[in-house]
Amino acid sequence: MNIVACLALLCLSAAVSGNVSTETVLSAAPGDSVFLQCYIGGNVTPVWTTWMKDGQVVAGNGGLPMGSSAANPRFALEQNGTLIISAAITEDSGSFLCSSALPDNRTINARFQLQITSKWASYWVDMKSNMGLMG
Image 1: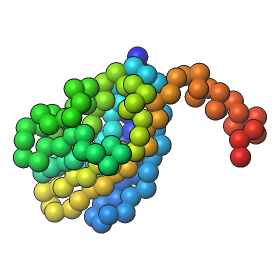
Image 2 (image 1 turned 45 degrees about the horizontal axis):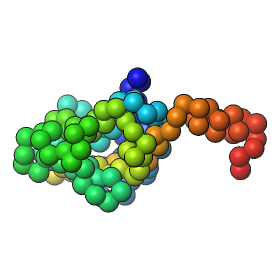
Image 3 (image 1 turned 60 degrees about the horizontal axis):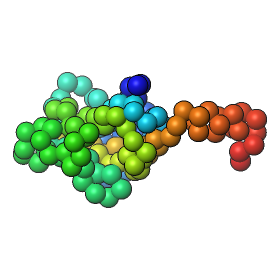
């Protein structure tokens, strides 16, 4: 099992204030733990955080204790807004959107495209790319 983590701001995928954000593509293998972090700009705890996958809310705290409102028992929401997906499966692949409100009234939006594929599938895509077979 591997741990796959992507920090939204380090991956240049989050936008502070406003609704614009870019999307970070992240790959993981079945069984990996995946950490999607919405905001890493300091030691600030979001007022609230909501995570959506393919347009459906999968975790959010909306005034409830953190981690208590994940739609899937393998999904957990940490106090800092990080979404943790334990033992990833192929069906976890999709587009994830995080929205977090900070105490200073800024809103953070981060987008991830998560691909759960076998290690061999990732290896084959890399090989094809390196050989110039992909355009």
